[in-house]
Length: 243
Image (cartoon, rainbow, N blue to C red; front, side, top):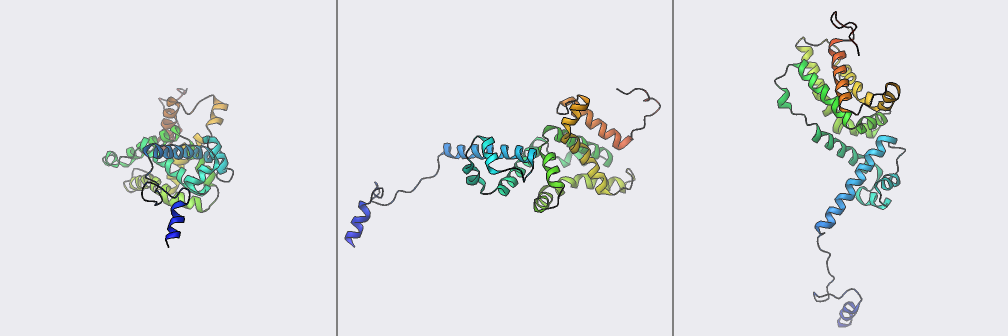
């Protein structure tokens, strides 16, 4: 028994100032925690950009790591798999957009359905203008049914579409909006803004308009609202007044 203890205590690296017991690793320092959070944030930013540009299948964890200036092992350290970092990237993207464009329901409750819908449309156009990543990811994921799309719909999309659905339905009940299928109205609105920003390079190449500029975003919001609520036909006082 004594010889076994002697052997244990004489093993290199075993002895410490606490009576020969193995020294326990202490809690990570604030600097270590900050470093981990910083690397995780950089990886998520890289992942959002990569998935938006290339789609899930074409992206590798190696590409995400390289674009973040890190080793591939860091992706596996923080997220384990590509699917996990994809989900984490979507969650981070939605948090970012939610913080920049909060939906305050109490500010909308006193508006009639038509004016409430106008606020929602303008907010969505501005959000799409600020970051096209979500729209591009939706194009990649939305063209083929699969588990990632189901996850997106259940976790974010249904809740995001709900204010539009409820407002349209209320407007129909109040006789302010035509009795069209709610899903058709909601997706027409969403697609008008989202797809236009996905094709922003086409707009710039064909018409020389940079949709990421603040003025262009407001022009698009005004146009979507005008077409949606007033149609394209000009009134007597508007004919010949186009820009």
